[in-house]
Amino acid sequence: MATEVKNVIENTPATTTPTEPRVEKAQQFWNKNSKYIVYGFAAIVLLIGGYIMYENYFKGPEEQKASEAMWRAEEFYRADSVRLALNGSGANQGFLKIISKYGGTKAGNLSRFYAGSCYMKMGDFNNAIKQLKEFSTGDELLQVRTAGLLGDAYAETGKKNDAADSYKKAGTIFEADNINSPEYLFRAGLLYETMGKNNEATEMYSIIKQKYPSTQRGIEIDKYLARLGKIK
Image (tube, rainbow, N blue to C red; front, side, top):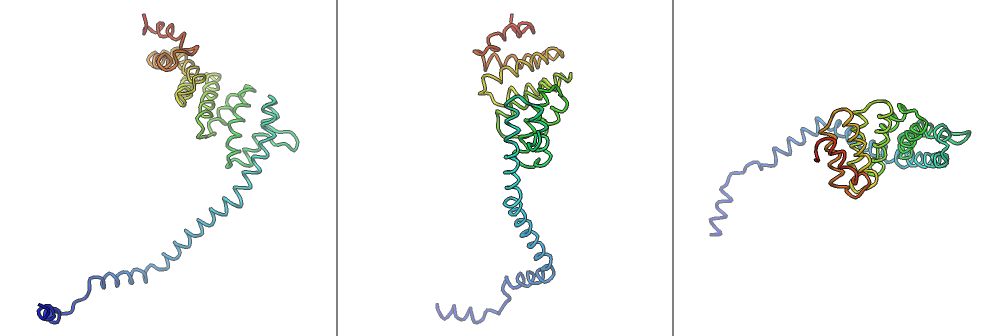
């Protein structure tokens, strides 16, 4: 058996191994494109390095400056000095200045919410809408508050449909909120009803009845459903 195997090996003609053409093609590809590959790799390294430098040497300090600037503006806001909170006073920057200088930071973003709230208290509803629409957050409670304020601002400017939709959003973001959710759903229902959108109004009132029956709005909601002919 060993002799037969040896004879087969010795008598098998030499062939090119399957990997040789692949190696040759790879070499040709590298010779042709090596410059672009190196440049591409270098660009990626520069992008990563630039991002790290931006995060550590620019964005970090900017976040700190924005947070420090916002502290005083928040003090004015809590004292109900909304004009000072919005526009600042002397060396103290207001929310608008913080947005202008540090809009890309977390504090700058949060300043948009505060600015929108200040404008609401000042009766400047169009600017309130502008600031609140530019604010974004992953915090559900802040989302509720923002959508609710937008609903109020739209209602004040006569944009009933936008107001109702914003109230609906505010009432459905965080269902565990037994205080704000039924209130905003109720406001949405009333506006839909005044616009003749009775199906939408019924939907809002029904959610209150099903999910918030023990709240003040839940206790009185049957009369609104009856008004729409849903309860006899």
